[in-house]
Image 1 (cartoon, rainbow, N blue to C red):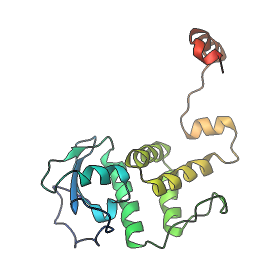
Image 2 (cartoon, rainbow, N blue to C red):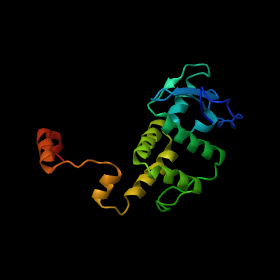
Image 3 (cartoon, rainbow, N blue to C red):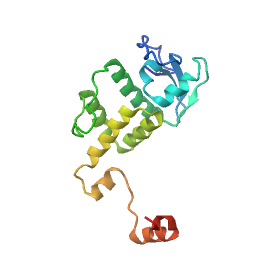
Image 4 (cartoon, helix red, strand yellow):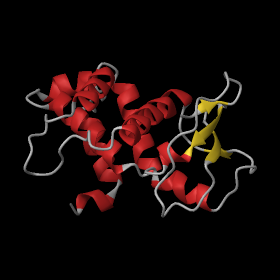
Length: 182
């Protein structure tokens, strides 16, 4: 588990990462809001961005800044840790399963985030940056479910999407000729 550096003593050691991982067991990052974390790579190795950075680093290397807030990184850690410790408990993915088919942990995780659209989108951006495809899939399905069967005004309200007056839109398109081609 990742813990902020100034926090209580670290918990028991995590299970090792897969044998194809060649980096250090722990990796330091600094979030966009300045918190430093020492990540257990056994949990976070599925985050391809962190994995690539860690494999070219050492345990005593300085913390690498990442464009993710501590609140968002905490969510990613929670998700990665659970799925590392419970590898068989993934939600079914793919075209053969309905969009709302979630494993119980993933359902609880997505329900927590669906109440805060801004945090959900921060987590989607973080999952994309981290290249954690399973987390990204769960989060995108959560956003899709929030939009399902909603009219456009309701979706705009849920996700705080501003409306652009028609005349401003036409003015913008007129100024940007590359848009007119489409």
